[in-house]
Length: 304
Image 1 (cartoon, rainbow, N blue to C red):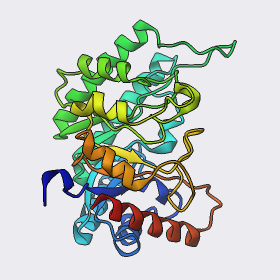
Image 2: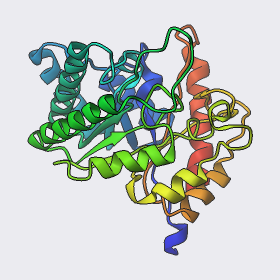
Image 3: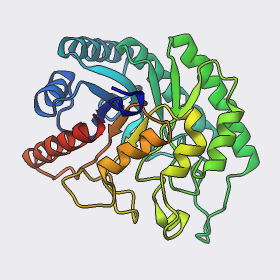
């Protein structure tokens, strides 16, 4: 097999398990027995790093034990939707930013105990303006403080023994980064971090046409211009109109075969690709499992 045609590692983000298959005894069986996968990205929607230490240690042990017993590799852990709803490291109150930094530090500690070597996600959002206008960039002072916090977090991750931290670019002007140039600048500014910061772009973020313009949303520029700092990717089915996070049982504009071709052509492969989908809480479990089974089979076939 040629290097260009080597299989692309494919797994799933566990965000779909929220309020459903919440324990490792449950999600490991869903991943292995229903989806036929052995690679996952853990979600901190399943564990709150601010739980008491004894509770965190018990859950970390269970995650490590059940994953090993099931033959599942946990590549990384992402912050999840619950923490993402807060403004985190860019909240207007510095005390809240401090709390968000501590939250991430404790997330690193949990990951280390659970045998997860990487942690990441979006970093935060500034507050909206009263007149509804959105700036093209966050304030320089906010950005400088964010970079300082990222360096501190790199040191803390290093102390926990982690190997990599992730930033997930999002298609919001109030978050950072949302352009290729911003992402490159950020990666340059944290280049000396004790643990390297890398990017995990999302197929529904770089293709978001309401932000980038009709016909301007595309993953190829992100992959080509940032290939040296991208070491994981999120894939979803979407329509380029909203950040849908649909599974591939839903019609959309993302073609798995074309996605695989692009990943190889831009040199992103063999970085792992994770299906990241979310469902309404009232959605029934059986239909979710069937849709994920079909989606996983389709993407596995495309990435071999």
